[in-house]
Image 1: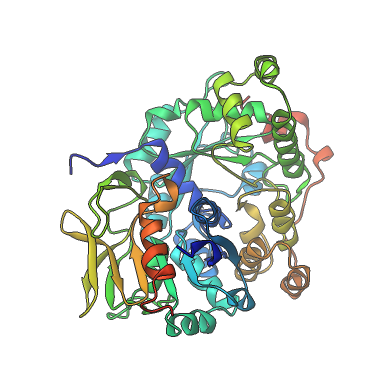
Image 2: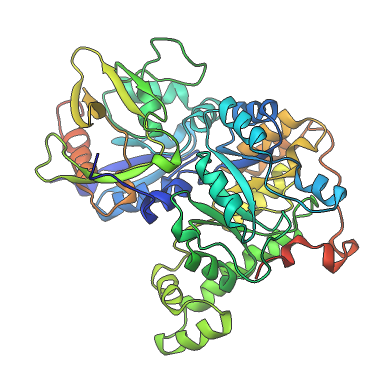
Length: 200
Length: 296
C-alpha cells in the first residue's frame, strides 16, 4: 500500500468539507482543501462533498474551478461525489436546470428524491464490493433515476439507485463522512486513488 | 422501509453540517426566495417580516402565516427554515407538520414562554437556537437543538453583539479545553450547563453541533469577520433585502463567506454594492427592546 504518499483534495467552497478532511487523515492520506484552480496541482484524487448543490455549483463557476475540474476528470484522476457531489457529477438530459452539471457519469438524478428533511434517514446499506453493510446517512438525499451504458450500480434503497461508479468517478447519495464507518471512503481510496487502472 | 431511522441526532445534526460555509437568508415571499437561491444561499428563512421591520412595527411578533411559508417552499429547491416563538409548542408542531426543513426557536419573535424552551429532542424536524455563551449553547443542545447560532442583536445591521457572542463561546471552549477533569463539575455549575455536555465539549475541543453567525450581519466584510472568528456559516436577516441592491449583496455575501481570508477579493466584492441597510447603535436600543435578552 502506497497510500501514505497520496494526496486527496476536498472541494472547499461550501458544505461538509471538514468531515471529509478528517476522515481522509484518519485513513492515512494527505488531505488538502481545494478552493482555487492552483489547489488541484499534485492531487491524486478529489472529493466533491455534500452541501447545497445549487450553492456549490454556483461557487465552482465563480471561483473559476469548472475548467480545472473537467481537466482533472479527463486526466483520469479519481473523483468521489457525495450527495450534492453526486448531483454535480450527473448529466442533465432533460435540461431541467441551469445549475452546473459536470456530466462525469451518464445518469439522471432526482434532487431531494426521498423528500424534505423530516424524511431524511439513516440505515444499514448493502454496497456492492464491500462485504459488510455500511452505515448510511441520507440527508435530503437525491437518487439516481437511470444510468447510461457502462455505469455500474453499487447500492439501492428500495428501487432507487443511491450509489454508482463509472471509470474514474464514484458517487453516493449518502454521506460516508458523517459516520465513523469509513468503508466507502476506503473503497474510493483503494480503487480510485491507489488503483492503477485509471490513475497510472 | 422498516430499517430506516428518521429524526436521529446524526440525521438532524448532519443536515446542519451540510449548510457549513454557506449563507442562510431571511425572505418574506417567494420572489425574494428565488433571488436568494439564485445568489447561492444554502437555505432561506421564511418570515412575515425581517427583523428590522419587526423592530419598527412593535407589537407581538409570531410565526409567519403558513401560506407565506408554503409559497416559499414551493418556489425553491433549497431547504426552507421558519421561526417559531420560544416555547411555543404548537407553532413548532405546525411548522413540522408542513415539512419545514429546520425550525429556528427564535428570540426575534415575541417569546410564548419566558421560563421553558421547547424540548426539541421530541421532534423529527431539527432546530436551530441562538446563544450568547457556552452555558446557553449547551442548555439548548441539552434540549435537543441540532444547530446553534449567535444571537447578536437582530435587525440592527450592527455586528458588535454577534462578535461578542462568538468570542464568548469560543473563549469558554478554549478555557474548558485546558481544564483538568476535576474542575468540570464546578465549571458546569457556573455555566448552568449539563455536565455530560461539558465533558463532551472538552473531549471534542469544539461544540458537538455547528454554530453559525447571526444578528447584525450587513456587509460582505461582516460575514468574513464572523467566519474568521470561527463561525461555521452565516445567517443574514435584514442585511440583504433592506440593502440598496439585494441581488448584489446576496451574491457578494455568499462569496465573502467562502473566501473570508482573501482580502483582495473581499475588496472587489465590496465595490459597487450601493448602500447597506441602515444600522442602529446598540446603546440606542433600550434594554427592554433588546431581542438577545429573550430566552436564557
